[in-house]
Length: 207
Image 1 (cartoon, rainbow, N blue to C red):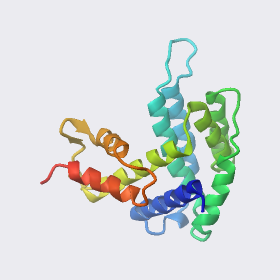
Image 2 (tube, rainbow, N blue to C red):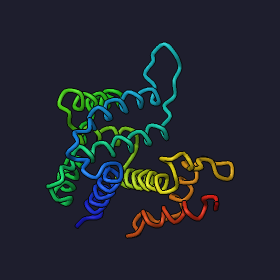
Image 3 (cartoon, helix red, strand yellow):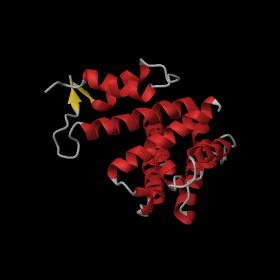
């Protein structure tokens, strides 16, 4: 299995695990993942900038974070509870390696959103086009995805649902701690997600 294929399988497994934590039979619930995709696209456009009547500079870091969020929803749309992850990963790898890009990032993003609205699908080729136009590769996606997914698990395990979770530690939000932890680790390590979790655990205030 290629390194990229392996990364996609890992992300699919992590997505299923996170969704299952929310609802055990999540893939039979008909959650509107496609709607989450196009809403995120609209939010991302604000971070990128689209208003011709005022000066705007793309917030690239925020755009990348939004793309990572969209990938969570895209994976959720692809998982059906029966098709093996490796098969899903192969299909995704094929689509991601053939980016569909329009004239500029905004138009490519609209292709991605249009597929979600009109066909209720995740257009991985258009997603890859957005990645290419914002200067993001599969390693950036993997790093961002595993980090965010692990943080979501960490939050759930530390009282996010009942309100006891502490979001700011030592003067920094948990997202900022996450970035520092991820930067200190090797993304190629087989236990990358586990190491991210342990890194967060080590920094989290002890009760």
